Amino acid sequence: MLRSIRQWFDPHAVRQVGSTPDYRFSLANERTFLAWIRTGLALIAGGLAAAQFLPPLPLPLLREGIATALLVLGGAAAISAVDRWNRAERAMRLGEDLPASRFPAVLAALVGLGALVLVAAVLVQAVRGR
Amino acid sequence: MSRDPGLQPERTRLAWRRTALALGIVAVLIVRMSFPLGRAAALPIAAALLAWVTGITVAYREGGRMIEREPAAPGRSLVVVALLTATYAALGVVLVGTSLG
Image (cartoon, helix red, strand yellow):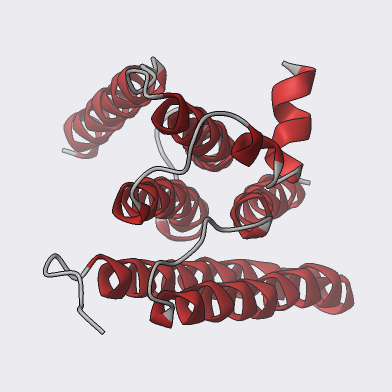
């Protein structure tokens, strides 16, 4: 764990194993990293927008909870992107299979859950408002 | 010089630009959310704008790498961009917290 974190900050460490792959594979890995960063930024933007533009919800602090959850998920997506890039680069250099990750599934489940909670909140509000 | 028919360097350069744009959107949202803080807003606004300028600098430097024949692997830029994103997330959490108190 600590060793892999140290590797994130040392761009030469990953280049010491195996052999350099076709540069196009490395570029694809880089674009995947950037796509994950933008995913993280989109989650953060969603959290900031929820905090600023959502009207008050029927449950106190629900709005702030959703905003904070989105912000934390966005930060986690950005950090996990570095790890993913590192592990993929390492696997490509060693000719191994690309690493698997649970993060996309966890992220999808949490975003889906958050959407369901929001749908419920909107419905409760609509019923009460009548 | 033969170009990669899949235009990989070009796509990667554009991916860096999109990322710089996305950083800007988040920076603007943080600036907007800081306004109610009054004078204390200067701190998160300065942090958000500094992070954005850093992000643009990194994105355009890494994009410039793409004119090389076979672009080398990126250096520390990846972890820098990830940390900038995490900084935005942290700033957002602090702003949500202050909006309560």
